[in-house]
Image (cartoon, rainbow, N blue to C red; front, side, top):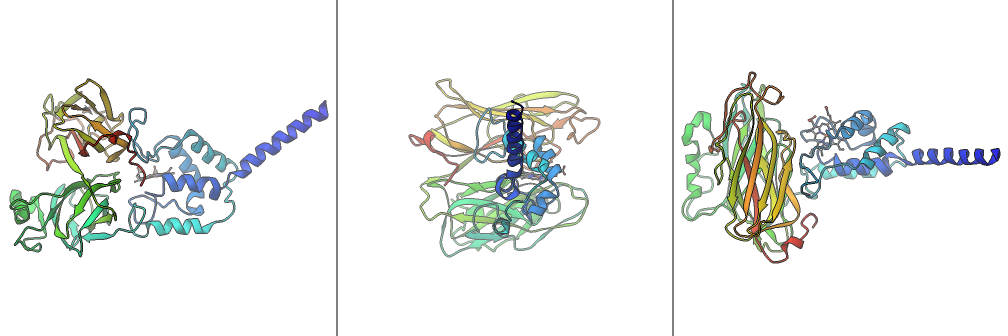
Length: 443
Ligand code: HEC
């Protein structure tokens, strides 16, 4: 009997040992990190260090475990029990446990596969988060110097472009040499206007130096029947915007992009250069993407009007109705520093409630364009509800004012970070039967 139990004990030891020894960097840990961390933690990105090689990761293993166990990393703010989105940056409990066990086992590297590391590095050498190099990149013609005077700035930049052929846009991505002081940037793409030279007028205008007329020099491009082709943007936390299947827009052969930068206060002089990457698909674009903005800077009236009294936590709501049957691809919520939580849902004429997004702990640093896993059908006459809760107390660590002050929001697009906004931008196409069944995460 004794011998028998000893034997069992022996087996258990061996089992535990094999289990622990089995976990290796190259086999178990690298896939987790490459899926959930490396897209941000690579050279040239706005992150404190790269997480690619065994050395990068092993030397920070305990720190990594702390940030994943507390769910500080990877950053993902949308509640996954309310609505699902593509590529949710969320580790499973099991993955977190595996990292712990790997550390406890002495961080074994396993069979060295430096090829994987090289492949990962190569992926990011093009300064893109997309899975291949861009087909077209257009750059700001000259760098802009953000003065280190701790002032906010609004800067318009025109980028003229001319290519051999129009492109069917599958994805678009904003990049810059330094993302740190960009509060947000929006960009509008216009085709060239007959008889107007795309190089006409200035390249750059700032609201502070050129006054409210700053934008006027770009007006020749908006003349006549010119239709803006696409309106997109970047805010902290966003990556590229991808259009699946036959959805997208056609990038004209010739035209201008007008970027509107909002720079946060910078304590040091910083040189900024920025680009837009375009990734084209070979198949035609049959369903053109459209954009609508609800709330500040868009349609609907925020109720009560967005005015947040000091030492209060207040709720505001804005609604808007769909005027045709549409299918949603992306939702893009936006608030500023007093934001506490954000929720959006739609109610159809048949009184069905469709959850759109819930962010229980709003975090100004991590905003995103969230892509649904499937197209979301909103019938004509649906009401979209957008609700924001704002914390204007001293308990809010992001509150820019101590003691708290009265904070205003309005419809002026050029508002300061310390003002407030309640906005939901929707990217959608006209509805087609069975859209609800279309998975839009993978190609
Ligand atoms: C969407 C981009 C993104 C992803 C994905 C991401 N990180 Fe980060 N990470 C950042 C940024 C930006 C910072 C620096 C700012 C900060 O600390 O919030 C950071 C900071 C960190 C820090 C330092 C935290 C501190 O307190 O200084 C660690 C450690 C870290 N990340 C580990 C990870 C790990 C491990 C993963 C994957 C499981 C991951 N990150 C995924 C963007 C990302």
